[in-house]
Length: 164
Image 1 (cartoon, rainbow, N blue to C red):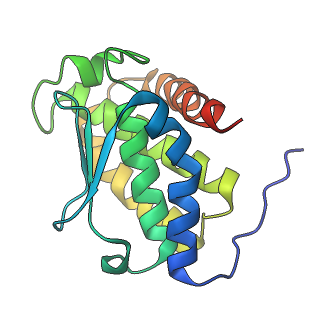
Image 2 (spheres, rainbow, N blue to C red):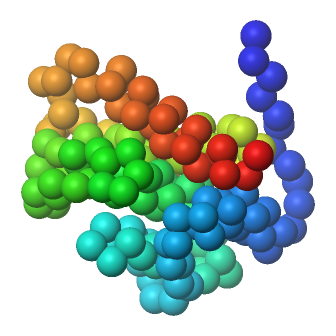
C-alpha cells in the first residue's frame, strides 16, 4: 500500500511557495520562463513559457499549487522533453488531441498534489469537474484513460527527477 500524506494545514502563501520550490529545479534545468501576471494560467509551447496568476488570486494555496503543476505537466510535452504529440502538434481548442493533453495534465497535476500533500477534497472535485468537461470529446477512445495516466506518470517523473 502506498502512503499518501494528508493535506497540510499551512498558510496559503506557504503552500504556493512550496509548490514553486517543488517545480523550480525542473523549470531552471529546462530553461522554462514562468511569469506571474494576468488572470489566466497557461503554457505556451512555441515560446516555452508558463503564465500564472499571482498566488493571492487563487481561492487557496492548494488551488494555486495544482494549477502550477498542471501547467508544468503541459510543459513536459515540449518537443525537447517528452515530445507528446498533443503538445507538439497542437491542433485546436476542443480537439481530440487537445482533450487528451488536458486529461494528461490534470492527472499529472493530481499525482503531484498527492506527492506534495497539496491535494484536498476541493482540488479532487475540481479535477473531476474539469475532466468531465472533456469527456464528450474523448468518450469513444477506450484506451485513452490508461494512455493518459501513463503519460501523466512519465511527466511527473520527469519533473520530480530534477529535484532529486
